[in-house]
Image 1 (cartoon, rainbow, N blue to C red):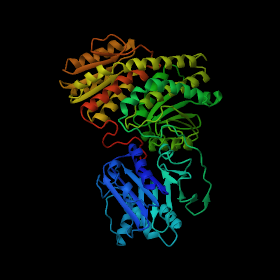
Image 2: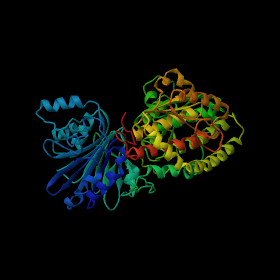
Image 3: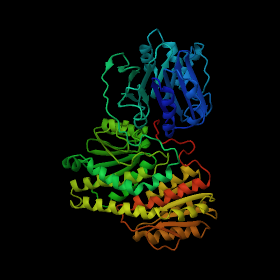
Image 4: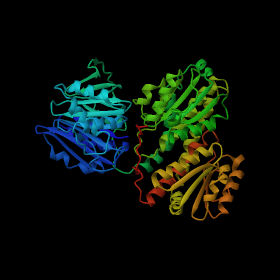
Length: 589
């Protein structure tokens, strides 16, 4: 969840602080840097965001290296004492850490029994003190010995007074090493490091990189490893200065078209037809918005598929007894490609002989490297924590994937793939029309913002859209929101419906519109403010949509709900791009 950046060279302080701003999507509770110059290690850290460290750029003009960290709190409150970096008790090591050390309590007890005093409530401080305790004159062996003592998921960057190198280690947490003539660097994120590195390499698990004038990889026994460097994508590497969520919503029509072009350009599904015919179950695995894209896709493809298509929350799939064998295909969906639960799910699939397929917006990501194959949804850089355009692109890409599967399994005629492409073109045009209702939705937000609760309802393909609408509104407005299949409203949730509550229905299937209207009538009779998103004439007040058909209705019908969430949050004075307690890339389980 946290963001790490480190750099050696003349511009290391400026590069680190600028990069921390780009990494704030991973967490923004607190921020800090450790700077090395001829006088030793200097730690500067504050509660808040990277702009609060601007003064450090001029304070250390002769620095030789710098490591930085932006925090999403896991252990310990949001305080300066719990902010990174941490210095060891002897002052010879500084560390920044992303992840969770499972055995930190036992390690801390061992250290405190030896007289070490802790200044924070975090698991991360343990690493700094272990380094000091384990140092015997060789920094590399000390780092390796310390890493072997850690259990859990971690990415750690280490700075020391003993030399000018950075030492980085990782296990089940993202970390990238970059190389360029201007200086070498380390980072949690490929897109962020691409601004400074000409080539990059992903550090493998249970390995250490020594980053100085050169970059060298070792295993934990000190054996040199070969580093596989590649040129990163330089697109979308500049973080926008202004608020971005609304602009990302407005990109959706173009991004739907880009997803279609990108899928075709990447060669389609890339699995032989004979193999596709052999699968007898298909999972759609994801968390949050990515799970909702799987839920929506399953609702759509059940209409034309001859195989079980099962959406599962990735964090549940890891621990529950869902069957997996060589006839299992799993689409593992993650915008960042670094979602820890989704990566663990993919590993479970492949370990049991199944075929894991990454659906992501980031090519050089941990998920891509643990899956058998991947596809990029081509949403471009998405910087707001609440995902919008990536969701629409996930739906478009998943629909194309299943079109290929259906054709291979002879569930549909070969022409069906072209039908899907035409439907996506229609969806892109309809999305542009839906965005034209922005002013009206902004006015509706004035009413919705004062509601005590908001319930979203829908049937079949509209229920996942209701779930996504509820998630968007709650995560950026902090309002109480829930979603239900429309028929479930009367089975419990109706007890919560009264004056001051809003009920919003999504109704894109004409055959079910009357039934959804009946659910809205039940809510209206209890005093609720009711609203509908639909292409059809409804008795309830309606945000109208173009008719696009069930294949792509969810791609379009979610847009008014994305806009509603945005405008409600703005009217409530929320930070729409960086809502409280959340991070865009969830790299801990």
